[in-house]
Amino acid sequence: MGGNILLSILCSVGIIEVLVNIRIVRGFSMKVRIEDTCTACGLCVDTCPDVFEMADDIAQVIVDEVPEGLEDDVRQAAEECPSESIIVE
Image 1 (tube, rainbow, N blue to C red):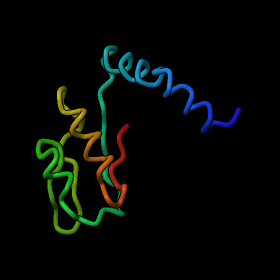
Image 2 (image 1 turned 45 degrees about the horizontal axis):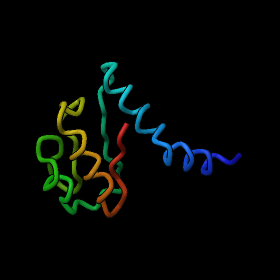
Image 3 (image 1 turned 135 degrees about the vertical axis):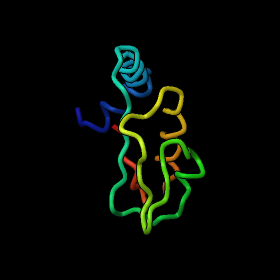
């Protein structure tokens, strides 16, 4: 079974969401980084200013770990990033 098919099946039955929630419950915190492909559009800063800020020519992450309660905003920023430069870990 191909990896993409397996991932699709796991997502469709909610397994991935359960695993992510278990990771959060166990105290693992979300981390985020920005790759150098950033176009400095500022959308991430608009979406989550407590985690992102603009530097000279690129957005930057201003926290070591994403604060509790801002995870959804960070995921949204990553999903909406036009250059797909936001990496959530």
